[in-house]
Image (cartoon, rainbow, N blue to C red; front, side, top):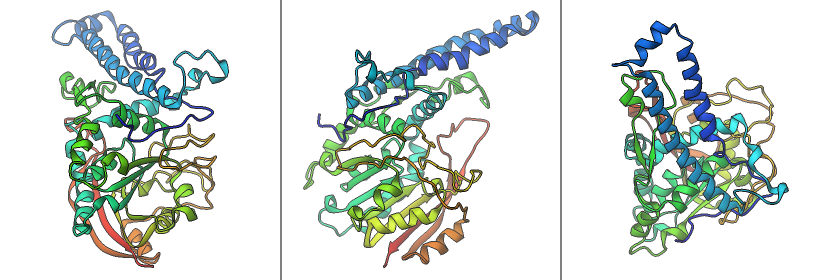
Length: 407
């Protein structure tokens, strides 16, 4: 099949998955076995016997870790192929294997768990709450357009690519932007390398032992992806003027640094930000960038909370703008098939930082060349990679608005 988007080899890469299996077994089950046997013998003997069978639980968690690690391995192999790297490098200067850091391992775990939200049947409720409103607004805005493939939609903070996929399948020309290599490589794997729907088993909650009503809830298995992206986009292309594969691209870059330049001025008909604007140290930067790349009369659709990611950061510190606070992508740019090349830094020093309320965000929009056309609070709340059966529920009341660039 034709790749939906492709990486070209950079001079370095930190790949997230190489040490995932070993680290997860050590941190999750090995340490718990040590702690278990540190209990007084009368206590651990009770927990080792029915109905508790705690040691059997750890064996089941080990199996779940291996299943998740199989996904990590598949992502790694696809990433190596995309970057033109060998699994066992003969050239020591190209030996990428020593680059995984504890931060990378944390991001690997988060990225793999995010497959639940974006690419499982069980994650459909979160997608319905967060992606469906964006699609409905786009379809209404461009309902009279004879060729939706001519409508260019930009999705900053694209993550694992599901919203980009959905907008593209609806007929639009869609470009995602993401700074995290961990999520870019994972989304490339799902979009380009999966062979069928429900190809891989994922245990999204297995690595955490807190707030479970039962072990069966902790060890829930979901299958990913819920659809085969290539087949779904091929089907969506029937009768379209332009094939979906030709209407989908992804850029790897700091959003403000790439899309704030003259080359992207007035280049897009719509911008869709979902759980994104609160990743800004300074919202002025995002507003100015979106105003630059959005044509006059174009719309900005936003949906999400205001969990300001840099609320506790030092003002003026060099920061990274990805949803996962990725610091692994700070050396050199990579070229994507869309023709974009990111700058040498994944972030830059800001002169200040500010956290606004929802009402203040709207006031700032109206002073920045946008006209607010719709602003609603969702009639329901949603989680973010939330286990619906957890004893602890973290939910967001979502603010959704549509603003039109007027000048």
